[in-house]
Image (cartoon, rainbow, N blue to C red; front, side):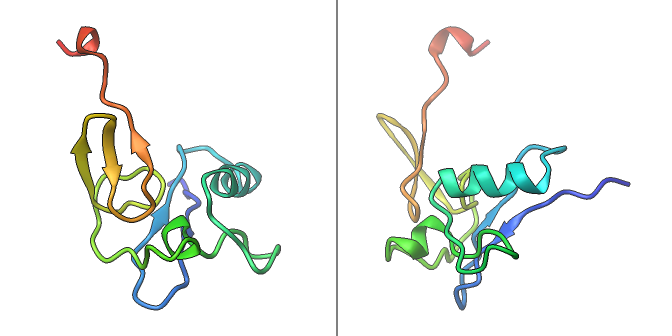
Length: 98
């Protein structure tokens, strides 16, 4: 059995979660989450507030495909855009699609 670290938003009613790639240690989780906009008020616990709540667009109310907060996304010309944290995951190149 393996244990996977994750960050969960502590804002009331927020469903945001950030789970980095398996094998990422605590330091990698914190570094990556902070780089993506997660914030912490306590350096001992790691990231506690998701980017959507930090910027006032949260809480995340529905889960989806966003790799930053697991919020729902909408397909826009630039890519899959999160309704909450506004992260954009670019569409794959047409050449990469079988």
